[in-house]
Amino acid sequence: MSETTNIEIVHNAAKHRFEALVDGELSRVEYRIAGDAFMINHTEVPPALGGRGIAGKLVAAAVAYARSANLRVVPNCSYARTWLEKHPEALRG
Figure (cartoon, rainbow, N blue to C red):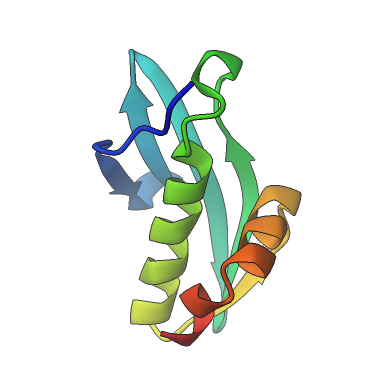
C-alpha cells in the first residue's frame, strides 16, 4: 500500500494520545508525562492500515509536541525507538 499523505492527527490530551482516524479505523500513539519526560509507551495501527506511514506520522507529531513543550522524549515503545533511530533530526531541530 502507498503512504497516506493527508491524514489528520489529533492530540487527545484527555486520553494522553495522538490519534488518526483513517478509513474509519483509529491509529494511535499513547504517552505519559512524568516531570520533564515525555514517554511514548505504545504505537498502534490496525493491520488493514499498515504500510501507509501512519505510525511514523503519529510518532513525529508526538515528538514535535514534546519538543515544543521542552520535554525529553523517552521512547519506551519499540516502534518509536526504531523510528527515532532512523530520524534523529526529529530530536535536534
